[in-house]
Image (tube, rainbow, N blue to C red; front, side, top):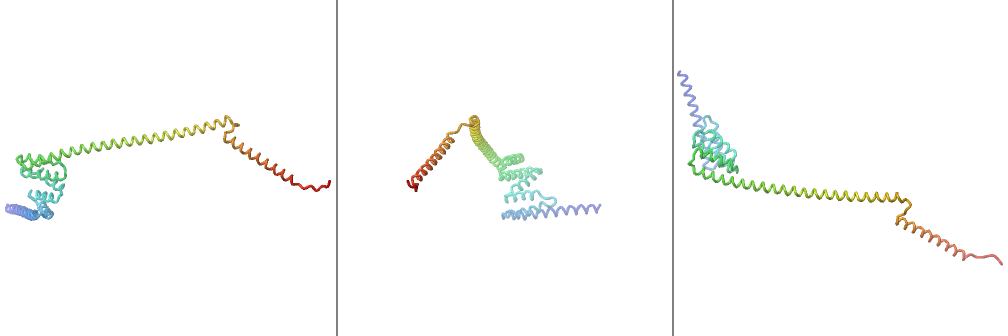
Length: 243
């Protein structure tokens, strides 16, 4: 029995030392926090959290130090854990209040409204939380209106793009149809010409007749030139006969 008592005392003594060590880190963290050395403060708070039987204070202050470093997602996670596990209403209200602040900074207005409402459920008399809730609700309203405006603009842009595409497609199709008609007309003309030539193989075209007429004229001119030359040469013949 005595030995059992000694073991219990040793265990209690160990837990007490762990608690004192955790409080020491919290104390150092608080000093650094007051000096605005938030990163160093967060390191001390983290050490206190690692200890067995860690006090809520260390975890809570760690969330504050992360918030000051603008690590809002990390801070929100800490306050969420504290708020969901706390049995003390004051701690729960404070955790959800700070959670709402962290979410506000991340522009997660719907989530921040939910957090402030949970804080007020734990502490309905907190005017600061009530003010923050009203502010978050107003920001949420503005965000929703902006989202609707953006959606409307996006839809209008999409409609305009669709209309422009349809107009362009129609122009392209009209051009294709026109090109096809032109080609068909050209093919038909060629076909008609071929048919006409086949039906009237001996009939000359006007151009062909003109070329043949020009050729005949050229031949006739050449013939006349030759005859003229012969006459000239004949007139110059020398007669040697004695009459």
